[in-house]
Image (cartoon, protein in one colour):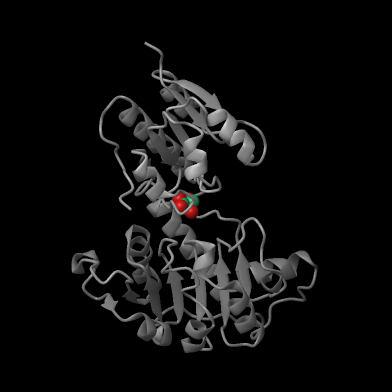
Length: 322
Ligand code: DGY
């Protein structure tokens, strides 16, 4: 019997390719940059599985290029790049990679919080420019985190892991969930306070975003939301770029309506908003939240195990239920 075939849209660790090769024919795209749409169509034809990245748009059209497609395994926890309804209509399983990237992303979020509130990136830029004239009592003063409120928007796995680290910095945690049915049990710590989104916006000193990108969360943080925030507050986004209206953010930072922002994700990746890149009180990272060797390997490995499970007729390990 012919072995099932899987298309992988980008280089992944060799150990993961080897795992797949035990049971599948592997077609690995190893060009630089992403696969073009035409190439994706052409190479997906005849495949039973697709392992893809958050940068690959997998819509109905792509799925129809491979009538025998059984699984789309995203190597990411977010899956807004996949048309899940179209997959469901075609009986195609969609999987993502939750859990394995939670801790790395939470660590990185704290890196951004510290970088923006303590002006680390700004200070580094100044020093590299040769503009440091020496220690002074009032030089490049940042903001203390101790005693302040960390506002978490979206208390899923990553939001909880970010909140769990707040005690180390003396911050109290408040959170808002957008899902009215979110179980009360999600609060790992009884001291975390649940607030409505508006109240969270008005009371938080650092607002950290941890919601998936959906029609309901697109531009959740817009001009109106920002105007509710304290003028000394910071916004940190490690979720998805379009959750923040970048025009509104750039405007607010320029007008001094926020103290700063730290972003790992953007509305039009890999482009960055021109109004943000020139501001000293903005930290910009190139979507590195989960970028450790250990975590990225675990993500690829989990996607591969999902592919192998589905192709062998077993249930997927981490199906997307959308
Ligand atoms: C994801 O997995 O969705 C992240 O954005 C990349 O780690």
